[in-house]
Length: 346
Image 1 (cartoon, helix red, strand yellow):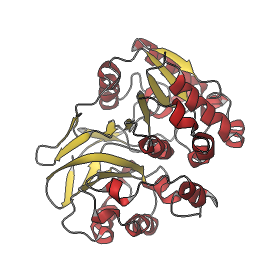
Image 2 (cartoon, helix red, strand yellow):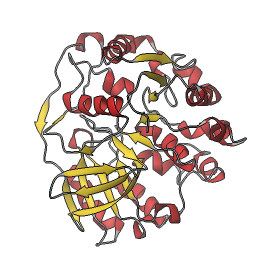
Image 3 (spheres, helix red, strand yellow):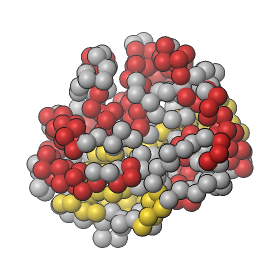
């Protein structure tokens, strides 16, 4: 892995919101924070071109990713935010082996719809990091980054790795106001429960892979995008069962806060792929604002239908704040009794 990060590139691979006027007060905060970390910051050519342009030009988003990997001066690629149509980059990254030619091992960090990019990198044997992004985390409107989130971001840029993940002592309600008047205001916080074992052994291990369940569902369902299933199938984005064997599946749910019926439907789509018969465990992120938390805890064991498969709920990763950072492609040992997930790189 990369050691200490010196230069970070910011890419907009999904939503182009980073280029809109109404978030520039947040961008300014985030840019100042990255510089205080001692980082040189590069916005890739199309990262700030706005919502409409990037929605109409997935090929430009792909170009930014290829350039960020090709540029040897860049140590870390930081995603601006998520979105909903990152799958549209597939032809511009895989049709002629473009990503394979450009890619090399460097830090890649993002979450939400960036799940698709993590799967693309996994196809090519590249390790990546899931759980934070520029706008939601580095640009936090409090006086400083949320301490738990900052702890993991700082560790990643200082060492190029994450040693272990432990629960946050608190969780925060999501903001309803992200405008300039909210600068410096504190979030409402609550005591956190820690990792919850829903079933199975409290200790298990494997490499972690997965992401946002809403995004993963687009690989199997055309409700949101009529071509998502066909494109993901054409480029074999979802790993085969042999690849999933022995892995730990990470699942977290989006800011859309899917209701129990939708959550059950998404889980069933994953079940039909057969992965719950070959995994070594499942890790589930805390839902935003803990909405439907109890319902999800009941639905998961029921739908998964494999009582020996460990399921651990309430990780601080994904759409609920604060956020840890979870390495993909690194051996992980989950120990619910010790309330720790530790990582060792071969």
